Image (cartoon, rainbow, N blue to C red):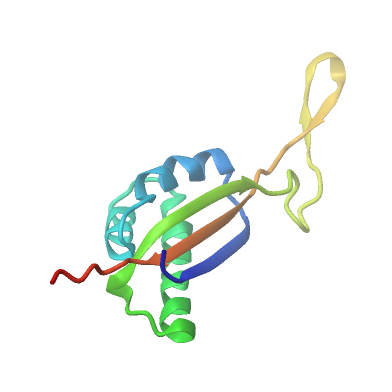
Length: 123
């Protein structure tokens, strides 16, 4: 097990359910392959996930001096953020019997953990 590099994005304005659909495709890939796969994905959640992986790669290069070709996505998680986005407030959505329901603007917290690949030396 190598060095772990963590990057987090909070209050991303996409529901966690939609983000999970994207992150399931890149879990376990090398960091470069993950960025390549995300580039060609049609889902809107691919852009913030790719941005977060690029941030984790930059953290690894700057803080730990790990080259980007030795990194792979060991863990990637999307948790639910607050139901009401900060600063947005509640807006009414009309419900049955003259009542109203709040419009839920779902957000998510995304965590990416990149790990250094173990290079086995054959003798």
